[in-house]
Image 1 (cartoon, rainbow, N blue to C red):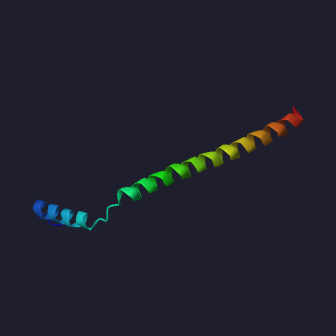
Image 2: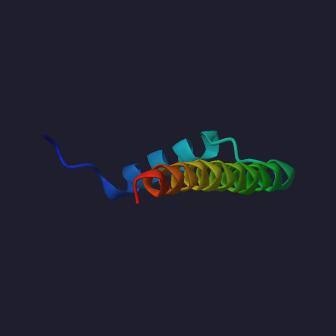
Image 3: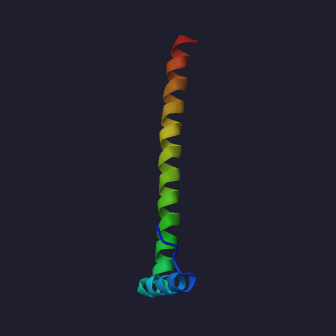
Amino acid sequence: MAKANPLQFLQQVRAEVSKVVWPTRREVFLTTVMVFVMATLTGLFFFLVDWMIRTGLSLLLGLFG
């Protein structure tokens, strides 16, 4: 395989970077807020599932203990 010319490589990198569609400040803000909302909902879901399992096991073990 032939070695790439460093100058040509940098030109190709620059051409590819110019094709990138960068998000707007608003899009970044909205996706960040959505990540925090989804992380909070996921944490709440697993907290409730854990609480139900713990309560169920405590009741079940209380019957035999």
